[in-house]
Length: 55
Image: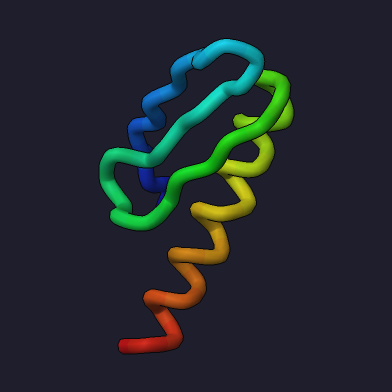
């Protein structure tokens, strides 16, 4: 089963910031949009795995 999540991405001066609206605590910042998207994916996977382990 695939789940869809919503990422909010903004550029602030030289930095890209973003977060996943559906999962509290998943937020990142990077110097490029591509790096931000990759880090958000990785952080989201870690958060989901952590939440599963807690249940």
